[in-house]
Image (cartoon, rainbow, N blue to C red; front, side, top):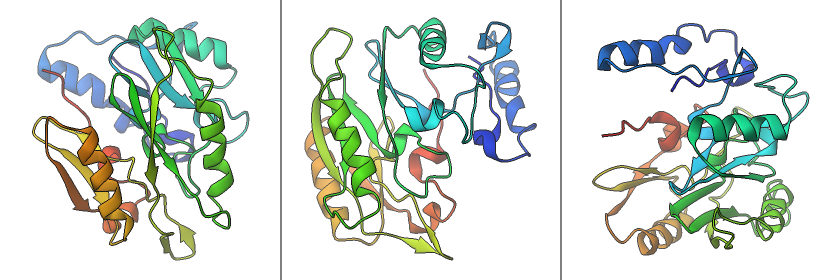
Length: 238
């Protein structure tokens, strides 16, 4: 499935990246389906959506509905984006949270905010420090998720995931988040930041993932590039 790419609607040098799906399809001898809406290429990124494998998809308004900042699909509103995601991914339910943490170069990727750990349970990042710039934006997600329902009409179980202490580099707040973990076949790898909450986050995720070990990976150097473990990866279905 070729969901198109425009460098997060921010950078100019995306043309070669956009050819990756074509190259992979040729290498794997697979048919490539072009994702479009009314004849125009449809742009999303892997980190911008999160699915439970049962029909529910999570994303954010900040990333795909902001009218002026990093607009991926100009002219498309919630109804059009919902319909296109349902058409190409087979989901039946699209849930919209509000905002991501400050410093996220992608302008609101869900993989720094809220992740499914099983079909009915999500972890959602929380910043209890009212003086932190992330407190209010992340609190809005907690208000929003109370009203969201899964594909069967049930409420998701929501488990809070802490935030590390603020990380800065060269005057920038970095988007450090434990939610940027990656689920692979043999383990769940979780970014850590030399922070007391590393142990807390690993403990929470270790209780939730019973079928494979949860392994912390030092990610301070990675997040200097405004992303972490999930941002670096792309699953390859069997």
